[in-house]
Image 1 (cartoon, rainbow, N blue to C red):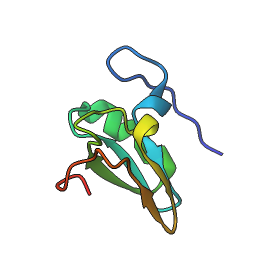
Image 2 (image 1 turned 180 degrees about the horizontal axis):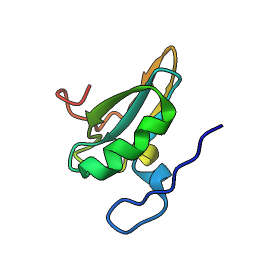
Image 3 (image 1 turned 45 degrees about the vertical axis):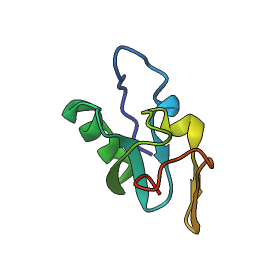
Image 4 (image 1 turned 90 degrees about the horizontal axis):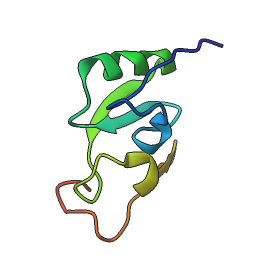
Length: 79
């Protein structure tokens, strides 16, 4: 298993900001390219996203290989 250390905006708790499934890794649209490159460790397609107009994807979304669950406050564009 490969590991890589990274942070986003100086915060090491990347689970607040990213959400991963078997095939996709969702990350905030305002994240740096360096952060996005660190997500390559998952060997999955990276997808820019926001939920509830926030970059806290790990808090607002739940996902697996069957789909994604978003809060009812998410915008039509985000869905």
